[in-house]
Image (cartoon, rainbow over all chains, first blue to last red; front, side, top):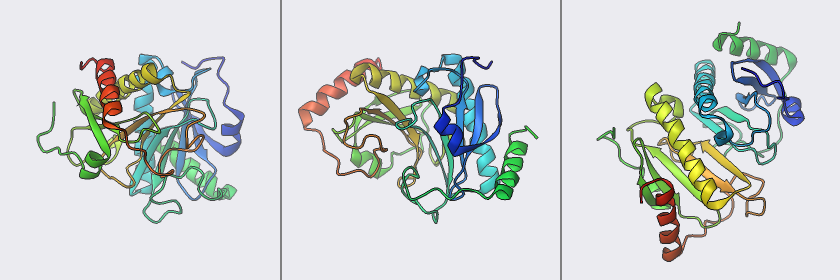
Length: 139
Length: 139
C-alpha cells in the first residue's frame, strides 16, 4: 500500500521518534515529553491536505486516526484529545493526535508554538514507544 | 439521523452563523472575516472527542469534513487547509475547517487565540453563506 515515492519530511523526521508502520501511515512520537503526542504521516508522496487523499485512503486514514486516538487515550487517560492536520510550517500531510491534560503547560491553548520542547530521555522514550507499539498491535 | 438530545453549545452558537444541515453535522460559519472558517458539529449529544463517535458516524464525519474542505477550497482557493478537533475551551465535539493564506493575520501560526475576531458585516455574511450553501448542495 506504501507509495515508493514517499519520503518523510526531514523536519518531521528530526522532531520525532519512529513508533511503527500502519497500512497507510507511519506513526511517530513527537520528541516532547510535555505532551503525549503522536504524528501520523500517510505514506503518499506530494500531499498537503487531508482532502488530497483518495476516498479510499481517507477512509483508512480515518480508521488509523481513530486507532491512534484509542491507543493514546488508553495509555495516558487524557482530559481531552486534540486531533489536527495543520501543515502551515511543514507542508507534507501529517496528522497530530495529542493527549491533553488540564494542567499541561499549554492548557487550554493548542500546543503548537508554546514554549520549548522537552526532549525525552532515551529510556523514557523507549518505554513509551514499546507501550505504544503494543497498543497499536505492533509488538 | 439527528439525536433529539443534541443542542448546540451556546458559545458555538454565539460565535457562528448557521450555514446548513448535513446528515450528521450542523455546519456553521465562524463570525470572523479574517479567516474563511467552518465549524462542523455532529448532532450527537454528550460527545467530546472524534473517537467518541460510533464507527458508522465517524465514517460519515470523515465524508462531511471532506465535503466541507472541498467547498471551502473551491470557494476561496486557500494556500492550505487547517482541519482540527481541539475542544479545549468548548468541550462539545466540533471540527474546524479553516482556509489559510500565507498572508493571513495568523500565518503560519494556528488561528486560535490570535488577535480579535473581525465580525462579518451582515451583507458579506449573507453572500458567503449563500455561496457555501450552494457548494454543499443545500441551495
